[in-house]
Image (cartoon, rainbow, N blue to C red; front, top):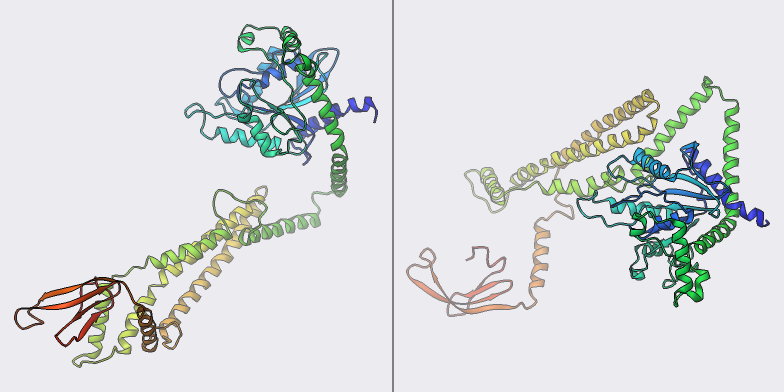
Length: 550
């Protein structure tokens, strides 16, 4: 490809950019481009206006750039500008260009200072420019509370990352000379997506393969005083030639040199990207041609085509429903749990919580057990707990499981129905089909709901009808004795003595008259005391602070 072909590379990509913007999609192609990144008041607007030689960008306080601006600079003998959204009009007054940018921004974002990632396409023809395409992005900002919505900073950051994360994008990081470059917001963001500095044009203090270029922009006083950009460029040239620190590199500094470097680097970048770009275009072209071929003989009233379309939509509904329940869906919700994840949470968190909520008063339970035992014995007294009393108390507790179990079913059913509605949203173009699909599937779910609840109640009735005291989890007499032995073994390990000494007990019901002194030993696990002079010891090993004992 000769020099002439190289010169046509940027205009060729511009045509692709315009074509994709016109049809409202990118066709999943990342076109080579230069994204201009910088903090508020970093000088991005001044750099771009210096390229054009005209004041044409909106200025003011706060967030001025609220939509990306795709700026296509095209060398031409005549000077004018045109927008893709009103291509029939040629702008020769660049004040009108500024007004149109502001008006087009408000058309999408409104007048409440909102932002939008939908770009504005502006093409500028001028004898003072080199072929170049740049995307002017909103300035990186930390908005004070009360000035803008508090999440505006994150929206801008996400928008910038959306453009500079693409491997096809070169990054022009604009940083003011009076700022510590290590703290440059533009260079920090560039480093996040381009850690090796292969795509970033910025400053030599960071490892950037594409180097750095210094420019001198107009001051705010110059801008307010309407200083001519041509005069500003001449002053910039004089500054670099006369300054002792820069005159030895004056040819590698300034706005004209920056424009030449960007033109060359973008051209080379497009050339390197062409093979993969061409491959993607050919692949998509073949796919579109195949789709067009299918529609050549398309007849809207063809019953076979209608049936096929209906089956495809129903099958897609089934696939979407399964993915939402089983996981691995195409669109992952990052805001809340839904589908299978919510059902999982119901089973593993909500249902156990409902079981734990079944609180009972231990005093009341002990009283009920006491009454049950006495009522079973009648006028007789017994040594052991009657089976009937045990079963009466246990069954009363098992019955309480019905409510949380049925509630768990209700929660799962509700989530299944919500999932059905989410999956049928794709059928919005066919309201009757959507309504019928929801009705059929929901009816089936409701039928299964009834059978599920019947099955749960049956399982609980089975538990109520027979209590298996031989089950390994049942703590019967044998298991209780075994556990007690294990506890005693654990307690055989010497424990810490908390206090020992003499204890005076005054209790008329135990001792007939007066009080008596006992020697006691209090450890971490038990309280022991000696009843008489022979050293006979009694102990209390359950909980010394429970308020009882012999």
